[in-house]
Length: 306
Image (cartoon, rainbow, N blue to C red):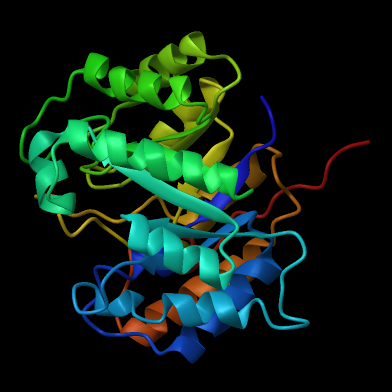
């Protein structure tokens, strides 16, 4: 098993479903805390139209904040989600390190999310991904609704792999499978990621699970078994796609890190700081959030025996 990389998406996927707009200063406070906790990749926001997703209206300002002298995090990749060429242009102008972009494997979800068919969206995303790489930036390309769709139900693995194959043929190796509707099972996760690694053993795989049906961390374990190294998760379990039928929160960052600590992985990530941040987020929204460990408290991890 290789190094497990934590990609925190709470400030983007986590907040996009919230009706209460979070001020930029509060987002910076949470982002600083997540950076201090030791996450590897921090997704600050998405470059979408501010009237459609008001929570993301300050994404450009957030990236510019971290471009100022003394504020640039040394060991954290700053990521942003883009849907189209305009978003890519905005992200290039304000210092995004890694661009995340994707195609849905569900025709219904694709049209609701982007207004395009799968074929149209795939062609567009591949062109954007290649442009991103040409500019010396990281490109992560994803297949959304990879394990099922809230509208269509079953999504054939062959359809998912067909999109992945086009990404790989275009030289885009950072491949994410997103369980947008939360339909994944551990068995399906191992099979689909295993198939990707057979297509191209050099592919860098990312998983993005929603906990809609309480299988989020079980699916993360299955992804680990299948050789996945990059894990997208959200502080306090915030999140959900606004364009799926039943929106469920993301895998909770501090719960996943708590699990990793219990099996002796990534002790360098400060769980206490994640728990403090989760509590701050819950306090801000004045409600219990899906995360469990910030409420129950962590199980102490015994010191290693030498």
